[in-house]
Length: 357
Image (cartoon, rainbow, N blue to C red):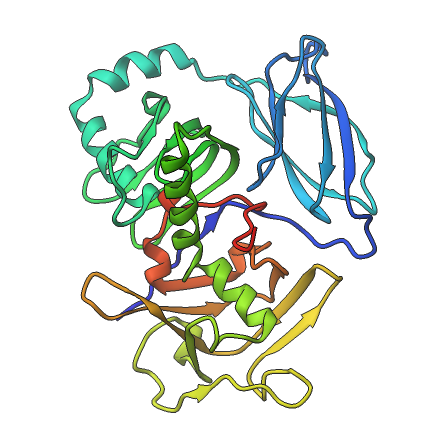
C-alpha cells in the first residue's frame, strides 16, 4: 500500500534563539508600481490569531507577538500574496512592504463559477479534502467559495488554478478563519498549502462555549500537534500513544510491509530516544527531530471509522523543526499516511490554543 504525501501548511516558521518574550512590529504597505499606500491589506502571522488590516494610509501594527520567529503574510484581492520570514534577532521591527498587482480580472470568475455545474462538483470534492473526513456541512462553510477557480482537466485530478483568500466559518470549533490558499491538488500526490489566520467567534450562550471547548480539546487529542508535544515531553505512554520504528524503508519511499523488524521507542537515562531518534533543542522553545525509516504511530484513546485505534505513519525528508507546544514549523519535511491525512480545516486550531488553559 503506497503512502500519500500530504503537505498541510497551517503554520510555517524558522527558529530564533535568544529572542525576547514578546515583540511588536509595524509598517506600511504600498503598491510596487504606483508607490501609493494600499488600504485593507490583511497582515497576519501564519497559523495564529494575530492579524490586522492596513488603514487608509497603508499602515499596520501587531503587538505582543509570542513566537520567536514566524511567517508574516500580506494578502489583498488584486495583489500577489507576499510572505516575509520574520526573525526577531535579524529582522527590522519597522517594515516597508510593496505588493505587486495581479493581472487577472476577478469579476468574470465570480459570474462564471456560480453557473458552472462542473465547478459545483469540483467544489464538493475540494471541501471533502480541505475540510477533512467527517466534517459536517452545517457546521463549517466557505463564505466566498465562488472565488475558487478549478483548472479544466479531464479525469479525477483536481487542481485549483488561482490563490483565493477564503473566509471560513467553523461553528464546530468556534473560529472564523481567513485562509490564503497557495496550492491545492488532488492527483497521485494530494496536497494543499496555505496560510491561516484565526479569530475566535463569540458563543451564543454558555452551552455553546462549553461545546466549543470540548470540541477543541477533542480536535487536539491525537493530532500531530498533540503527538509531537508528547514526544518532546517524553510522555507518549501517558498521553495514549504507542510508537514503533521501521529502521529501513526500501528505496527511501513510503510503503508498508517492507521491513518486519520494528523497534519500540524507548528512553535512556538521559532522556534521549535510544539509537533510533534524536531530539535536539535549537532554542528554549524550538526542537529539531530526526529519525531514519518509517515511524508507526497508534493513538489508543480514539477509534477510527472501523473501531480500531487511530493510526498514522510518517517519515522525514529533512530534519523536522517543532515548537515546544507541538506545532510543526517546517511541514514540508514531513510525509504522512493514515489518520493524519484525513484531518483538515474542520479540526484546525490556532498556534495560541492551549489545552491546559
